[in-house]
Length: 336
Image (tube, rainbow, N blue to C red; front, side, top):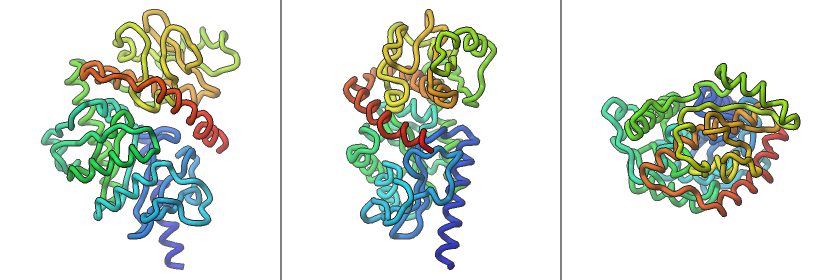
């Protein structure tokens, strides 16, 4: 009975963690993944494709630290990044919580070719003076996990930027994990604004539309009766050079498309005249708002890439990721 009670308590804690991260805007929908260390043999992790606002304790998945695979009789599949979480616990004995987030400015700064310096005000919270950037790999692949392990072994930092992907945050308890995620975003936003020389801004709430966005949506929605339309008038999108916006972040390739320009060409967004606004499409309002969120995040990543002369993700990888996403993850999320 004691083991069952402990298991349920850990599941409740992980659900509460997801809720707190959602409330702070550090995660949305099914993006990212979180885990708690159960003991020296297992971890508990969020499932693949399940939205955090509908996730229940029984949905969480127990994974073996040794095999990095789900234990028998689990109700759902674990996140594809479960092996990465296992590697963290094996390389950081004091770790009890691992967050993998796709937060806006941490994702954008993952395009940096070098480690990120942490100012004195945040060093105590983050527990480091510099944050390494792990090499790029396709989501859920051994290559990505190997890059993470290499970063963990070459640095004592418990915060890692994952190139073109997001952030990895390691902590000894849930409060520390959330505090580090918030501090990381503050550090990365400050670094971004110093790099580009202006206030980057951020949409604090995915559901917020300004007056112009609402007016444009009402006017243009009638032309797209089979889809839901949301509009972006984000300043960082407007600041982009002329031409199409290519994927610099992998979730842009998955969710938005392989290239966004003034013609839609099968993508989930299209620019209006002079990039004054962008139309974002989805099967429902939640999906359309998610498209907008990723578009605006990728615009910031593109600004970082421009300064550091980083190329977009190769087109063939973008097409592959988009295919996998639509065949697997979007179908799983929609079924829940």
